[in-house]
Length: 239
Image 1 (spheres, rainbow, N blue to C red):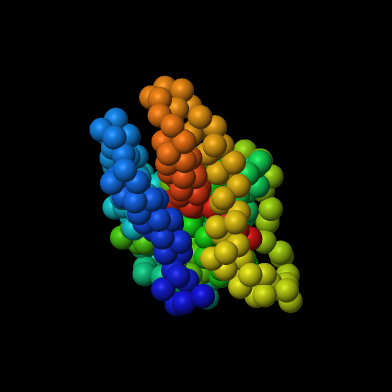
Image 2 (image 1 turned 120 degrees about the vertical axis):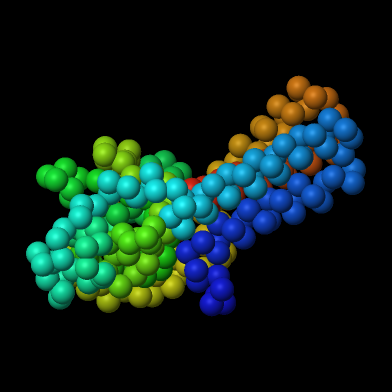
């Protein structure tokens, strides 16, 4: 995989671009009603992708505000709590959520005696990351030496489904598993599971708006592209 695709946000942006290209590809043969549908879908993809990226880069503080506590600089030990003095810090770990077809990475950490969860975009380094200090500073979130990108708002309640902790000890197979998980083909294959409903979306479009085989194929392909993009932009975890 190229170095550009190793960035945690590269894959979500790639799927967004693919969904937009699919919409654009069908515009020359679309009738006015179908064209309106394609434009609407493209605007939704653009708008939601932009919002998610803004959250990831800390432009919207609700994603991380209140997520970690602020400790006085003198109470923090430099060996266990790296980062700028006075930055919010807490000790936590990465957990993987598995719920039906949904798989996401979360940071789990205590704040004032209660556990909080923050979804983050997948990074291969998360697979082998031990319990580390979580810090936020100027919209940037770090766990240990690794910068992570929030994939949504923090939660005060445990995410639904099964939560799988990272191994407490060094896993000799961890690095190899991280490399396999980051492969583009694997990520597309896992997210493509959501596209199983695309043919039904095509049938629904034919039922509502009419059209022939071409309209059905177009609606199905667009629905499949969007179905792959949506879990990716929400922070799917292929590990």
